[in-house]
Length: 64
Image (cartoon, rainbow, N blue to C red):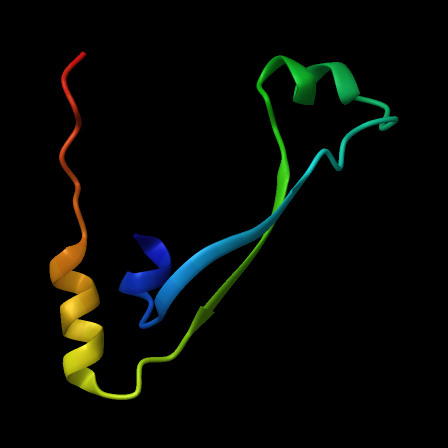
């Protein structure tokens, strides 16, 4: 959501990596499932494309 709000579209995660393995505080990161990610996005070609991406945002919290 933050990336779209900043004016980008087509957000996607390209890589998930355990960047904390071997780090001094590795245990803390492992306890929380922390991963480093690489992501991509692009600027929209038109304002209408960006508005469509904004409209597609879903902020509903699913019920369990």
